[in-house]
Length: 332
Image (cartoon, rainbow, N blue to C red; front, top):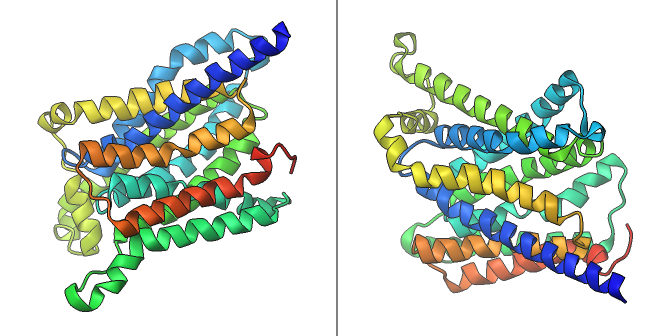
């Protein structure tokens, strides 16, 4: 009796930590969108992920004291490079998408990886049941209502089109799916906190390298002041102009995105999932999109129309349906 009571308390504490994690990640979309007011997407990502990597170093050093977590430097570097490369693509597309869409839309559309992951797992020999396909249908239908329904219905009267930011974010969801599968393969052999710090460092360095490449492309006389660049790419390069004033102005979104979203939330997730049942983790972490909507509405005054709310509900139902076997306690 006492044993089960202790286990229940551990599970409850883990659930609370997972709920906090989902809230931090959800409100991070608000911070990411706010950061776009002061600096470009690659600058923002570069600084925040390097901050996140540095914030995890004390935990890495502590865990490396355990022989079970010891890892060859070459293995750690290769794993970090692989995961960090995929993370860089996913988060770059997500951040660029946030320049054109709302924090709430971005949070829910990014959550499509929950539905995509088991489907892409088919190519790795993993079985996928009927709930996954039903859930994917719900999620994609929800995305239609979220992004396309209202523009298509009113296209004849006001010329509105599908939000390009939603489409860019949807592409990022595919790379988040690949990232999940990569982490799933690597985390079995590598300490997860060490892997997190390494991939954050790689992502941050790649992002700053992208800033340098874009700025050189804009200012290089050989390119005729970027005459050879596509207009959209040129506009993106112009957003990467950086100054100490913009750093000071965007310091709060950077601190939140780096220390809270990357460092603190990831550590809470690792600690909580030791004791949380998989069904609890699935449901609670799926609430990230809900918190993204709340943050966007409260802090950024983002509108919530009927079609938008219907899209949110369908996407959330789809995310949960894809994990139905886990929620019911069945093994896949």
